[in-house]
Image 1 (cartoon, helix red, strand yellow):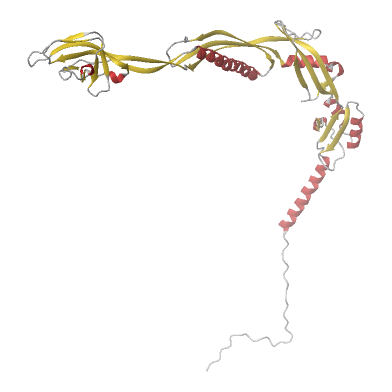
Image 2 (image 1 turned 90 degrees about the horizontal axis):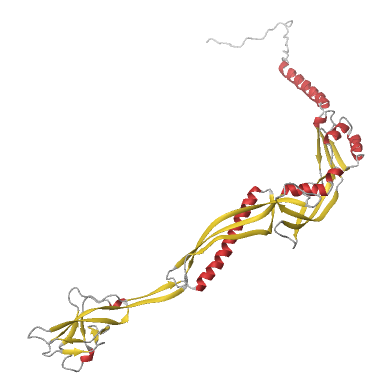
Length: 408
């Protein structure tokens, strides 16, 4: 047997030695360069931030005071300019003409009724002539409808198998269309219990008829209908005409008017019916002209500003603080409209934002506050910089934002 050894035996030489060499890991040069770049960027950003001026914010609370005015003014049509001395405001008339129409019902009633009329053939089989009087009654076969002869008549005697006949004009005993007949036979109740009753009769022959009977109720226009319709029409359409004119003024939005200065007239007012007309309804047509004295809001604002001496004192009205009230007077006439103008407002002195920005630019926040407090027109102020580490306003006045605040 052959023995195979697949492991190399160790070296038995004592002088031989084994040397182990440790291999170093290569350094990550890319990571180091990235960190250095980040540090450089941060350094420049911090340095640049301290060099940036940022923005300055100033809020000014100006000194305000109350102003008021109460005096009689006159709105006069035809004036071109404001008369401050005589308290006259120029006005003009604004008008509109509109056409209206409406339909109203008739409430009266009238019964229209007629009686049916026509001719009956009245025949007799009796051997003698028979004379009958006016208003002789004829009763329909059903026994419901009665007609009367309009005149006396004679029925000729019968001739053998042929009865004697005569045409008799009759009229219904009552009104209504149920009396209109085109066929039928009729008995004569007045002959009952006589020998003639069964041998005398009336009939409608071919083509003959009783007609013209009717009964109906029609509407009639009454005096009350006309008066009521006029009142309703005027109330409704005077209001509509006024509303239309007001809507047109509101669309323009630059004028003032008084509710009691509207004038309305009817240029046309026609009722298309008369009392007693037999119609279900009738129409009213009218043309209404509405006019009102108006004046410009801008003229009142100019008048108030002048009267309050705002321009002389260098003051302006605080936004949304101006309240105007107009109280009517009894002395109005066709030439002018008089009213009491009552005004209240808050005013503040004109402040030049450009001058303020020039005064505080480049100043510390504390110095800026002291400068602003020294200005008589300013009651108080707030100053801040947009960058929290900055204690100074920008040197460039364009970077300073100034806001005027009036508080509550």
